Image (cartoon, rainbow over the protein chains, first blue to last red):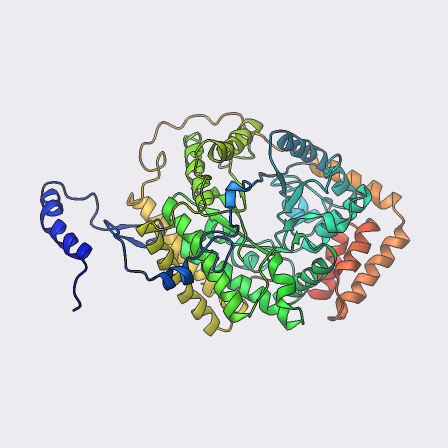
Length: 320
Length: 236
């Protein structure tokens, strides 16, 4: 055994005296403590030995690899996060009113919820749509509905996130077409389509096609957007629904990053250059009540993804 | 570089004493912000009951604004770095995630891991354990299995008009009558041919069909014909 550090010596002393006395009279509420996802939590954490090299390798500086401390060097001192309330219900007219209200209240981005028939690619008049039209989101059947949905909302000024997966290419096409009618250039469009089919098979359920053609549609979108709408986030690789289905925090990150790896592999396989599309991959996570576990989860997810992209896929360019 | 959007956890909201959800969402907002999110949706207190009302949506947005403008947590970058606990937990999560990633890799990747039901089973097991803990009372959910009150009547909830399908169907009928149907058909046919050739990028063809006012269902049906449909494998 090596020599104990001063802190370790003091800790042993504290355990034998101060702590012991209290525990004898007032036992703790539980025998053991854990996070919401069953990771063990100790009574007390102490400084640990970490060399400067280790700090730089694992934690580093914000805006630099491995991004543990954040993706921007100034984070919220520069600009707050985008406050984006997911909304949409009923008809395009009603949802358009809600969006205008939210923008007038200081919201800074739009997030479109589609009804179930739209999410699985059926028109409202399809017999399979009965009972679901406009229920969990807005009903969009054609470009005409999309024109109404964004009437009076300048698409060069807002960023729009669309929770749409299996038919993501179609809704993105509607959006591009609306922008063209508004006279907004494609290069100016900012936003995100969810476009994450793997988690639909795992947890959410709004899939249409089998995995292979689904992955083709996704890589088609990566390629098209990298050339035509460079500021568009082509996918939002989602752990949210995995967590909602009851996963742990660890599983949420693990399965989401595993999905991400699969998309990167599929795109490389059809000949895309990782540095051309990887910067436009974005992610979507859940936030639960266990405050520290969630914070650690986000920091860990950033660090792991950075390492995967660098070591497994030799990505060189950092994201915009 | 992992940029992410966050939504506060819908499954953490309770139908009982819905105003308590405002407090939950506040904690979750802090988690997202202290974790460095790029974008955030905060749930409304009444989402366990139905679509949120305008009042509830406003409180949810105000929660973000109070954290942003009043709490002070935004004034420095990654303020919890260096916390003995947070750094330890960050390492622990990285370690546990890596174990899963290695396991999935040895299975041949995520598509295989999903198709053989491994991923779904792992999630189901965790969900079951969590539910058991709530039912046994080992895990406290305030207002649900502790500190309950006689069920109060739900307040005003927004409901969707059941006539919507009729309204949308009439719009579709008009659209199909008024558009240039030859142009629509041609665009759909071009998409069909493109779908058969794997080297074709379908995005421009879908855009042409959209501009020719082909409906979402018509476009997806062409792709269903060509690609087939996915059927879930039953996981036991």
